[in-house]
Length: 612
Image (cartoon, rainbow, N blue to C red; front, side, top):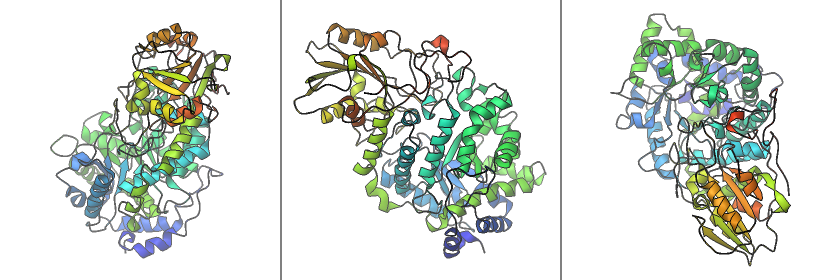
């Protein structure tokens, strides 16, 4: 009897599962929720499957690739569907998502074995594809909080908002050790220190998965991207990390020990290379180290079409990736595009028949996938949890995000104790268009893949609106986006922001401040009023003259939708407690600069942060 066809038996098995330890005594210790009973049932299920059914479980198809061909979910017995960065339903609302997810789950449950889908989404700073969902600070801001309990609470909120709309798998957290600010994904890292990243990454895993994967509010977490993506030469996305194995382990593998010990059920493999060899073909790291040495018992998923970057034609790429240890392949293409999910299924079947990929390797991959599905109790909860829809973007959820913003701010300069604003400050002038730009405040991976300027989502509060809400009685907040107003002020807040970006398009060879920033600061300085620079960025930028032109400088990172959190700190309703999760360079010539370097003289060191 296949367990996915027997919900009561599944429930009995899964409620025997123990709590997940925050860090196992030894990385190779079996995880509590992968009980012997779950293992045995997964093995029994695999034994009853045809080769084609097994291969179907190893395929993750993008939603847009399936559009118009939804019957392929049933025909191929697909194991997973994802929504890529911008592959949203036509009705991009919470209920629109729930309807789509439920419809595809019904197709999966119409297969012979009735195995539900793992349904994935890039919920990297909140459920960031859905208008109205809470958008949290990106990871670099959470890294500045140094607070694992707060990070765990943030991911609990994200998990609830994800489940409300149907997906059950978040491609997060990024346990990335970001070592070069030129890299456009720096903000997806909690910081440059492996210990900090490991601690917060493990907390995020616990937030998503709870103490029991079978909990009705648990979402499968996905630690990413294995391995070394934050250390590529020149900070190039999908580039090459050049180092010896000892360095690779010390800097980049260490956070995965924490994630595996915290019980992470899936790990995504990196586009990047190590010493010239693509990570998706690195059997020694994927199978021998991660699955063997670290004892990872979940499954490995590829990144978006990432196996296509391996040497050879698609047939060779499929063979290499599966033999290296990939268990599930993320395939964005459907017919008639090349390298589509039908082609993958055909090629892998041929490889097994010809003996180029062993049946034992297939069985291992499928057993890992089914083990996670069984541990999650998906047969008992395949559909969107619509009872949670009312909590999406709720005041309670926004309060957690607001606290994250408050705790993430780092005070880099505070001449003459300019901050917090004194009671004598009755007129605050806010300068710079970014102060009233929710899209700039949220950054990339917000509704669309690369993000955009403007009112990108509903329910959020810009920094300007937050200042007006939080300002005490008798204090007026005016707005001067171009910095040309002659109006007198007791303090001027200049807000500067990077343009939104995500992977690839965010890579920079020049991290100078955004275009008009220095001109705005000089104009503000000419008024003789005290000047506060609030910097919205996904990484440290080269401050140059801005440091001298400002009385106070606040690194606000990419705070997300709750701009009041910044205002709370500027007006002194909350203290400023953030500490730099990365070293702040003096100039481009100094990059990369990281704590522990033989020569270490940044503008502001790792861990720096003034208080009031």
